[in-house]
Amino acid sequence: MNIFIPTPLRQYAGKKDAVEVNATTVSEALKQLTSTHPDLKRHLYTDDGKLRAFVNVYLNDEDVRYLADKEQTRVNESDQLSIIPSIAGGRTEISKLGNFEIG
Amino acid sequence: MASSTLASTSTLSKEEILRYSRHLIMPEVGLDGQQKLKAARVLCIGTGGLGSPLALYLAAAGVGTLGLVDFDVVDFTNLQRQVIHFTSDVGRPKLESASEKIAAINPFVELRRFETKLTSENALDIFRDFDIVVDGTDNFPTRYLVNDACVLTGKPNVYGSIFRFEGQASVFGAPEGPCYRCLYPEPPPPGLVPSCAEGGVLGILPGLVGIIQATETIKLILGKGNPLVGRLLLVDALGMKFRELKLRKNPECPACGTHRTVTKLIDYQEFCGIRGEEAPVTVNVPEIQPEELKRRLDAKEDVFVLDVREPHEYQICNLNGYLIPLGDLPKRVNELDSSREIVVHCRSGVRSGKAVDFLRQAGFTKVKNLAGGILAWSDKVDPNVPKY
Image (cartoon, rainbow over all chains, first blue to last red; front, side, top):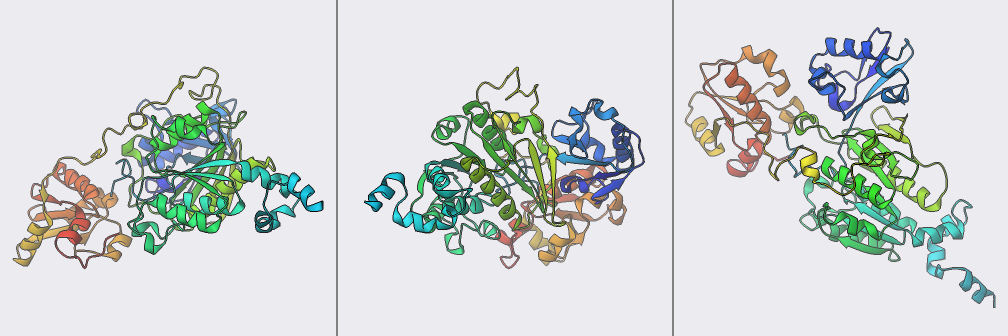
């Protein structure tokens, strides 16, 4: 199945917009993704292994948090997993608040 | 007789009827709808990329009262997408520039101007006199502030957000719908947001997303159609794909759930992990001033200039440095000679600060950060080097 990688995280996934994995559950798919692209792990998971609060994972159009089996939900080849992080942009001049002034 | 009957059933003037005739002749708007628009009071937070098209279209459509909140000043880098501001407005307050354009487009709009930063202290007061809030902000603290203030005051929050060529839009805070915190309970910690090397935005994208927000606002006012409540619209301008995800109202949501913990506005800077205005994320590394680097280069001293920006930035302007993007540095560090004196630079000095820190940890001792980056070089050494 395909995992859709959003623009802000592509730099940690070899600049790819989608990564193909072979998995039977959501959790297994994410595990495969982060083992192929270890840099992503820090961005998706907290130190104690929980999915970060500003990263949402959707199985097709459903938020995995609201599926009955959550990350243990079974997936098949035609499903699509999407990672949707929060983005703040709008008035995109570099923020005077400091958190985006990285460059 | 006929004209007095008309006058008594219409709150629109003859001029307004002419102006809005293409609305009035469609059944989804009609006279009723146009009067609803005229009676509506919409608050736009920000008059930047999203706020520009939003304010222009809402004004043109005949929204009766338009509030604008902005404290920024127009600069040249805004003009690529913030279409409410003109080249001649550079240096002027955005609020002043935006107000003039709105008045020119539609003098029937009543403008309420708030030349201030939206804060926990003023948000509830400002929101009170409006029916709908449209969020065109650019940072997480204000997003959470707008969300919480909307939930507390019971106003719908028309949300839009953009990054490079991707956007998101939704309508939060509707009585039965989710809020922004249902979607994202917490903001990302400052260190984990994408770097400005990955930043930037396609100029038309805020236009696209801002007009989606304007459309949703008009629909909410008219009470027509199917609003983006409980749906997150994803816009990919590069693939020109629109996707939709389901949003659920989170019963555990701290702002709008059954056991609410957000009962008043909080310190959103702190909530987002930002300490002060400057919030330096730089580590303490040895620096060199641009004038000093210039002197050493002119004296033909052995200084190796390392540029850690991205290749497309190098194309804009460069100091003839050796290019290794920050992200590639760990795997390309063997290309550098640790016995030579190295000066690292980027655009503003932040990425190069990280690079210097990394190189020092890798055993490089003669490595310095160019203070202020290529921007400072342009200011202090060579004004011919363009800033971006």
